[in-house]
Amino acid sequence: MDVRSEKLDAVGQKDFNGIMALHLIKLCVGADSIEDLREWVSERAMNAIAAGLEPHSTHTTRMVPKRVDELLDGGSLYWVIKGQVQARQKLLGIETFTDADGIQRCRLILDPSVVETTGQPKRPFQGWRYLLQDDVPRDLDSLGAAAELPADLRRELSELGLL
Image 1: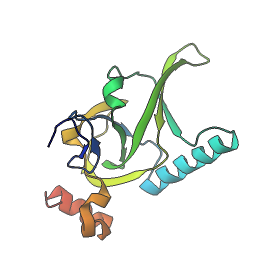
Image 2: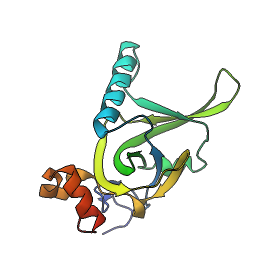
Image 3: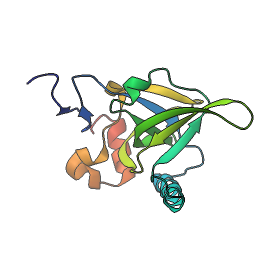
Image 4: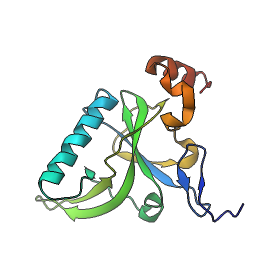
């Protein structure tokens, strides 16, 4: 197989040109569950549609990633909820802007789809961090029948290295 052809990687995400995508990981402050995140994203999408804009969700950070090209080559923002990586949203764009206080900010433009992932424990940290492709949790739908197991059981099996 030609390494430059499109293929699916180990987590079921597209890998283009044999280049492993780079991702971001961030704490999802204020969300107690993936449902909270989905509600927030849905509300933001509806507000955007009402304003005549694309239904993308956005997240504003202070620090601007330096590796933008790698992030936008198939990368996602992985969300840590209650100490576990539980979901991701595909990165569609990264914009810099200056806010009303004259501070440079970064707007992450995200796909409105929230993709549930297998749980992966993560300690608290500030801001965002780069996340290498080899370190991302698998998409939940890539587990087949195991995706139907209760979340607590999936988490325990994952911690034991069985998922």
